[in-house]
Structure formats: structure tokens, C-alpha cells
Image (cartoon, rainbow, N blue to C red; front, top):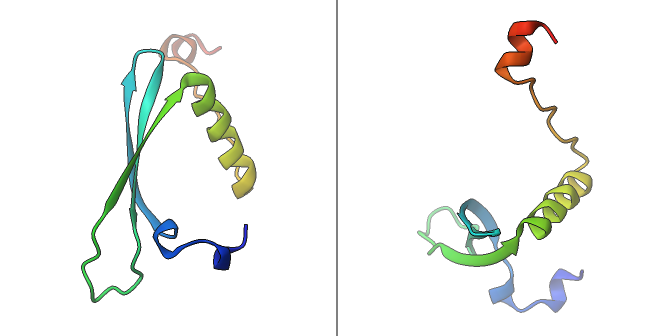
Length: 85
């Protein structure tokens, strides 16, 4: 995507995120700022996205692939660790 083609209000830097589990999905809250000038106190814009569990999983996998990262290995449960499995 060409950054020059986007209007300025569409550009920003991700500074935080949170989520709330809601029914069969989640509410993803992305917090962005538009200014990179650290002397100014830019306002934080919040963008709430409603995602199904399937959409959240697809997005997570996409971000792992796009960033070149691997998914974390899930640790064995406490019972499996105690039994040496």
C-alpha cells in the first residue's frame, strides 16, 4: 500500500492495545497517535474492532507470518509437568 496515497488522518503509530472477551468474539481496542514529534502531546485515538474468534485467530496468524516471528510454544500443563510427560 502506498503511504502517499493515504490521507494524513489514516496514518498513525500503534502505541497500545487491549481486548475484552464478548460472547463468541472479542472487542479489540487499538490505540494510535498521529504525531511522531515527542515534544508535542498527541491525542491517543482509540479504534474498537469487533472480531469473531475465527477472525482473531486469522489476524494473529497473519501478524506472525508478516513479522517473520514464530508462534510461542505452549507449555505443558501443570499435571503433565508433574508427571514428566
